[in-house]
Amino acid sequence: MHPTRNRFDLVVVGAGVIGLAVARAARANHLSVLVLERGSAGRGASWAAAGMLSPLGEALEPGPFLRFGLRSLDLWSDFARGLEDETGEGVEYRECGKLRLALSPQEEGRLRRRLAWAREHRVPARWLDAHEVMAHHPGLAPGLRGALLLERDFRVDNRRLVQALRIACVSRGVELREGCEVTSLLTGNGRAHGVRLSTGQRLEAGRVLVAAGAWSGRIGGLPHPLPVRPIRGEMAALRPASRGDEPSVHRGGHGSGGPVLESERLYLVPRDDGRLLVGATETDAGFEAGPTVGGIRHILSEAVAMLPALATATVEEVWSGFRPGSPDGMPILGPVPGVGDLFVATGHYRNGILLTPATAEGLGALVSGQDAPYLPEAFRPDRLRGSDGSGA
Image (cartoon, rainbow, N blue to C red; front, side):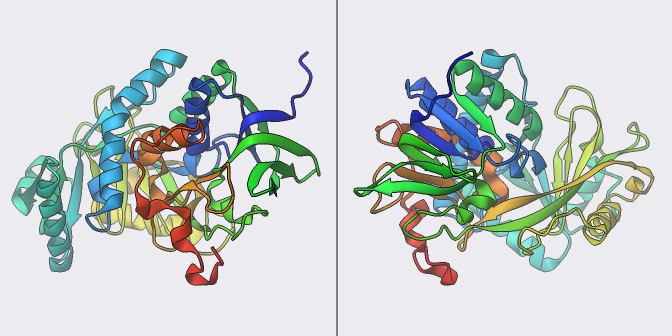
């Protein structure tokens, strides 16, 4: 048995998809890497997600987030293929498309603006009127005004992604320690040089990356606390009673399973095994655990309102997770000013799965002493100093 090692080139705090993906990239650059996880690897927001890869669907406006999301989407095919080749674990990466449904004149106006963004960024998309939508998806409830079809949207199975990243990291020689809560960073002489655990143990590092998701703001030792807050999301997995005469969104098999269906209140994401993921609530209630009766009742009611046939579906699973929200809704990525060798990758909110490849590319380079290929200035940690009274 090898002796426990207490010094590494890089310590990563957090073993969600972001922390694991950056650790994998850093190990490819020949760094010795330790990943510390307060609970079980990948069982936070990464486990609770729906796995949608939809830059245009998630962007609030044209700008850095949309450009970064599109770059990450471009990286996803090679990222998924590389993981499968390396580990033998598929991540159910599928080109499925998405229908963003307009249920009111206001929603139609907002979606038509997104169509203009799509054309500006050369993203394949088109407007479907209500008759076109219902012709392809007759099970949808009446009353639609139309839908924006995002033809180049994808999905992955985020839980399989977590497993593949974990296997890849360990096989490359990354050390993963679970049940190890980091309470503070070790700093001195203007740089980070390690972390302190809740047990009091100190671990030394050449560089430190904070990628602890919604828990990032609880880690001490930074010049200013990270203004990351937990936003609870609640979801359910349904098994439709029959698939032959239902909308293609929940037809199983090994194809795409049909498009993701989404309104401003709900999304339905198909899986290859025939299940439908339904989500999600957004509750700013601190680390108050879920799922709750009210939250699950709400999303199930909305699902049946969208697809009435789902009233006979079986509820196979319900769960919740904490998204890492930032004050401006954008990720917090990059070096921490004033503290050398300290980096942050958090605040991805609803988009950690989508942004995993681009975050791994950028932060993997930075923690290895290289220039990041593309990391927007708008994501820098110092932009949030003093925002919302958080002190960052």
